[in-house]
Length: 253
Image (cartoon, rainbow, N blue to C red; front, side, top):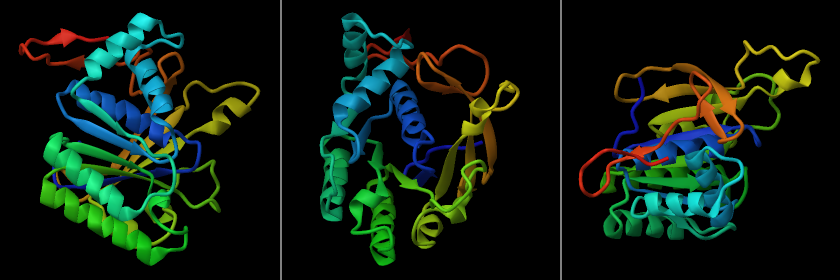
C-alpha cells in the first residue's frame, strides 16, 4: 500500500512522546535488513541512546548481553550510519551531510530528526518552508529518500490522532512533502481501571501519498515492550533479516 521511493520526502509527525522516532527507528532497521543504506541524524538524542534502542529492537531483548550488542554492530556495519550532533544545527550543514552521505557512503535513506532543530523558532514559517523545499530538491537531485521528523501542534486533544493540517508551523510543510505519516499513541488505553485489549496501543496513519498507489488510511499497532517494536499483528517481535555479501539469506536476529 505504501512504498518509500527514491526522490521523495516523507514527513513523520505526531505529539511529543507518542513514539514517532521509535517507530521510525524500527523502519530504519527494516530498511537495513532489505539492503538499504541509511543514515540517521538525530539532533535531540545522542547516537549512543539511538543505537541502544535499535539494538534492543534488533535483538528482541530488554537486557542486552555483550554478545547481542556485538551481533547488532556487526549486522549494521556498512548499512547504518549516525550523524553525531545534538543541538540546533544550521540548515546548510544538514544539506552538506546529506550530500556527503549520498555521494560518499551511497546512502539511500536519510533521517532528519527533527525540523524544529533546523529553524530559528516554531513560528519561523519562512525558514520551515525553505528547509523543506531544499530537502525535496535534494531528495530528487540525489535520488534518495529523506525522512523528516516533526511535531504536532500542542493545542490539540491528544486523545485523538492529529491529521496532516495539525503539523506544527507552516502549512507549506505538508504541501511540499510527498508522504505524510502520523504516529499516535493511545495513552488513554492504560489509564482506565480495566484495559480494553481490543483497542490498539498506537496508530500509524498515512495521511498523504502523492505517488505510487496513492493509498491513504490507518494501521492499528500493538506495542511489544521487550523489543520496543510496534507490531501489525501477532505477539512476536519482527525478525530482522539481511543479505550478506555472499548473496545468501540469513536470519540475523
